[in-house]
Amino acid sequence: TEAAGGDPWDSGPQLGPLEYFEAIGQVSMQDGDIQIIGGQMTFDSRDDTVVLLGNLPGKPAADATVIYDNETTGEFKSWSRPRMDIELQDGQIKRVVTHNTID
Image 1 (cartoon, rainbow, N blue to C red):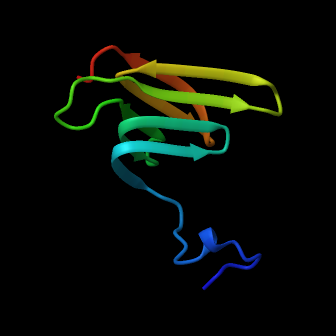
Image 2: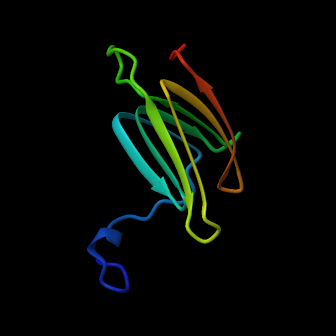
């Protein structure tokens, strides 16, 4: 059924908070001020971490990208590397550790 307000993209089952998930294959996700683009992503809410890889499994290394764009404060940051380990705190980026290789 359609959710109140009539937005067809809000229909279907509603999920609670995610504890853990993996995404593989041209990952593009936006949550608030944070946008993540890459080939593989693992999110673990138990320790508020995201591991982002630019490449698809078995393919050559490629850069992943993280963009933080807060229009209210005007703060803008971006990172691009083959691998990034992202620490979150209260839904915001606390720290990004970049790696030039995916290992």
